[in-house]
Amino acid sequence: MSETKRNDGTLDRREAVSVLLRDPGDLLVVTGLGAATYDVGVLGDRDQNFYLWGAMGGTAMIGLGLALAQPKKRVLVVTGDGEMLMGMGSLASVAAAKAPNLAIAVLDNARFGETGSQHSHTGLTTDLEAVAAACGWTATATARDMAEVEALRSRLRAEPLFAVIRIAPDEKPRFIPPRDGAFVTERFRRALGIVEN
Amino acid sequence: METPTWQESVFRALKAARVSVVGYVPDAGHAHLIKSAHADPEIDTVVLTTEEEGIALSAGAWLGGKRSVMLMQSSGVGNCINMLSLPVTCRMPFFTLVTMRGEWGEFNPWQVPMGTATPHVLTQAGVHVRRADHADDVAEMVGASAALAFDSHIPVAVLFSQRLIGAKVFVK
Ligand SMILES: Cc1ncc(C[n+]2csc(CCOP(=O)(O)OP(=O)(O)O)c2C)c(N)n1
Ligand SMILES: [Mg+2]
Picture 1 (cartoon, chains in turn red, purple):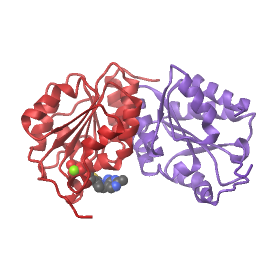
Picture 2 (tube, each protein chain N blue to C red; picture 1 turned 30 degrees about the horizontal axis):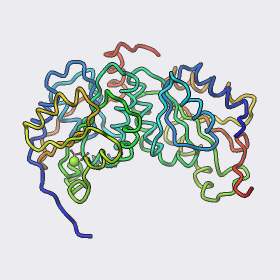
Picture 3 (tube, each protein chain N blue to C red; picture 1 turned 45 degrees about the vertical axis):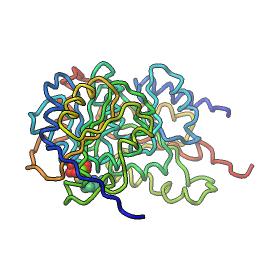
Picture 4 (cartoon, chains in turn cyan, brown; picture 1 turned 90 degrees about the horizontal axis):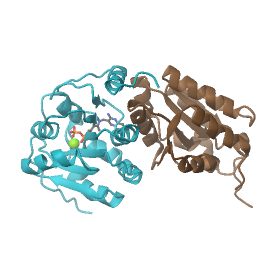
């Protein structure tokens, strides 16, 4: 089979994420390992952010568990294309669970950026938005310019939306939010008023 | 399918432990629990495409203040290993009930490798392993193991031995 490389995205990842998370309020945010964690962390550490530094492929399902446990809150998963591809089955599990308060934004640079920018499947043959739609996500979108990112900002806080954001492949300086998982977990739960359960 | 009463009591033990999220990849040995969970309006029951999803689901539920359990068979343990770093690193509970295959009257040789490895790989990955062999103490073991997981914030697996569940009959 021939390799069809789609055009690289052009959006600045930091600018796109800063629009998505502008005035976050009490939005609960789960970030996939690597650059998504740095992009969210650089905007300012929040108790309602749960940063992953590992557990590759698990971000969407963490979002689902959280959304089921906190049905009155909005949950936003922000992750990379490589991380989403590893947990592609979770697109089916999340769609089937029908949590209305969960949305996913994939920062798609068509690369495994963290590990040396190798091409990922989204730069080769895979269309993640189409995968999500085929899994049963009824609301899906792809943003290619900042106006489309701006439009996603409110939709991601109102709908069970799966959105792909076509970012440029260049790497940004690392920003290091807390990586002690036990600390971030306890802080997150306290922010929700959970002490023991 | 007739349901042994110990499976009813396991479901009651999960309810008593305030479990309200159930993730599963089906196993015949869990069929009764899966059905009971789906029928219970207080439980969110989530079918998974692979077992590692259940670990992430449990972690998210814990972050949001809910207790969960994952139901799987021993072959599924092999799909979990790296994701177990999540509860271990985050000092979160993780609670799973594992139906054992490949150890007692097994007909299918493909079940033997993971069945043999299951207690060892779980232990190596940081999970506390308990084993239920007898119908009369399985509910008590589930209750105590749930308390261990949720009160001490550690990953705990209860293995339901194949002798307890009954070996699957292939040629009827
Ligand atoms: C299970 C597992 N496999 C591989 C890795 C190595 N790894 C770390 S980040 C990453 C790629 C992330 O790519 P993507 O999610 O697209 O993020 P990007 O850096 O491109 O924004 C990989 C393969 C890992 N941490 N865990
Ligand atoms: Mg990427």
